[in-house]
Image (cartoon, rainbow, N blue to C red; front, side, top):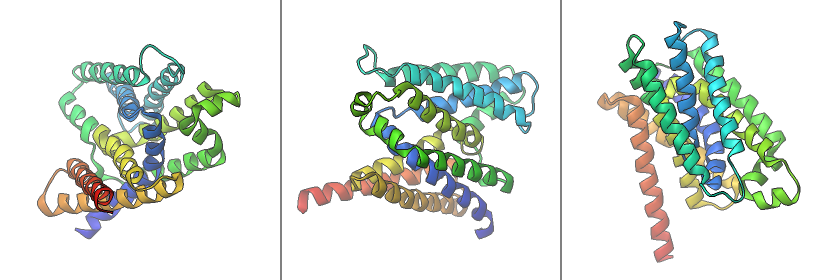
Length: 271
């Protein structure tokens, strides 16, 4: 069982590392469902590839999927406004539901469409290959270095957008770069882990960390630890009890969130 879990666990650690970082930004921006929307746009691109007879293993599928995700990134960057009649989250939700419906329509016209829909939602992290893990790791490192180099700009537009405007920063440009790099890692990982697991890795460790710490750096470290522990617990439960791997990890994240929230409430009341 240990050998079976090793590679998926490494993939989980990589995803925890990059998604926790993005998750803290996303929660601060209050655009919780942006990962679902970008993942669904990428999945729609993959579905269109299948419709035109391109095998999922072909490199061009990633380019097409990323093109769809980049289009979504452009929409989200352009629709973020200081004062808007419609909330940004509403726009993101609309993009998600339309992309999801379009993907279902497209996959309905392809062989094994139902199986592809299931894979799109829950992925197959238990069957991660060394090549897939290496690609995700390399991409996560490159994106991480890019965000480290421009951390001041990304942190400012997420944590203090009004200050960023006062400094005459191009909010839409940095928003687009944020969503574009986020969409890039989503495009590569959505086939492996599925839309639901991406949401869990993005949001739950970040929320747990924000319950426990105030500073961005501390939140990042706490989120990494929580993501690693929840991944390990979910993989173990999947192997020990023959649960679906993706669903098992998502439920593990849910249990961890309940524990952290309960501990925070206990500390608030009795200390």
